[in-house]
Structures are given as C-alpha cells and as structure tokens.
Length: 194
Image 1 (tube, rainbow, N blue to C red):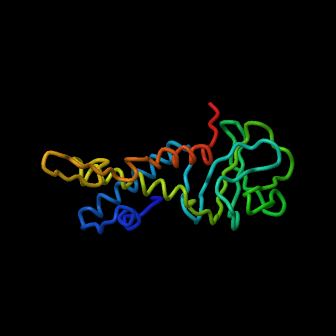
Image 2 (tube, helix red, strand yellow):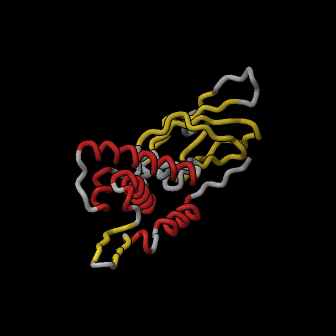
Image 3 (spheres, rainbow, N blue to C red):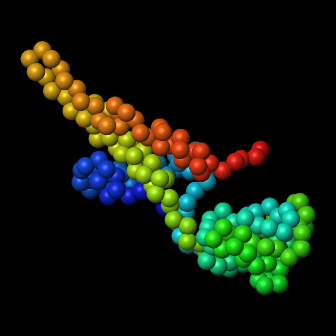
C-alpha cells in the first residue's frame, strides 16, 4: 500500500492528472513509499491482518511491530533445531495480550535464546501524517522531473528585454523536504543490529 495517492500528489502540485499522468503518479507514489521504507527500515502496511510475522523469543515479553493491536489470531513457537516442529500457543494459557495499545504480549514462562515465534494478528495502525506528507512531496518531485524536466526547481520565468526573471518553486528556494525527511529518520528509524 502506497503512503500517498495520485489525488493528494496532484492537489499538492496544483494540477489534475490526465489518465497517463495518473498512471505515472501511481508509480511515483509506490517509488516514494519504497524509498521511505528502505531508509527507515520499517513500513506501515495499513490497518489489517499481519500474517506469520517472525519474532525472536527471549524472556517473557513480545513486542509486536504494528499497533494498536485489535486481536491476536495465533502464535506458534519453534525451537532452534532443524528437526523441531511448530507448537501452537494457547491464548489465555500460553500467552495474553498485555497492552493492546503498545502491542505487548505476555508469554507464559521465560523463553531461551534461539526460539522463534510466528504471530498472526489484527492491528489498526495507520500511516502517520508526516510519513504521508514526505511520500507526497517525494512523489511530486519525481513527477515534476517527469512532466517538466526543463523546469526542475523553477516556478516561472520571464524574459523582459534583456533581463531574465526566474522565480523558484517554494521547495527549490528553501527545500523543506530534507528537513522533513531528517525528522522522519530520527523519529521512525528502527535500529538494525547486524
């Protein structure tokens, strides 16, 4: 699911897309979404069901990635051996949703390093407004280069006698996207341990 829509991109650019431009806008929205996901090392799949998301088990708490959590459909665990089979955990006996708003699951007992859980659950997490805004601006920048390659960063220009007057687009004269994107990175980037 893209974090922005052709309608939102067109509104930001101040134009109504033709059918061909609309198709380009869909691709630009997907490209902006992929760029954000890659840069932040996380994604917002939109509210719905997450199936078989894998987590390492260590201790008695499990922190789900997408929250708030509406319900947990199933949790299976697997030992760290090649021949091990998945064991379905029983709700209310082996686990319970401790805090739905934070996506915290309490597991019965204390799990050892190497065990893994596969969790299927329903969440209501939406794409944050600042992420959608950066996606919209990135996609608009991609489209601007496609639709007006000779005017990248220029809002208008006029030739008067021998004088050339150039008016830069707001985001070209004082780019807001780099600061917005830097803010996204500091707010949402998931630490990666290698």
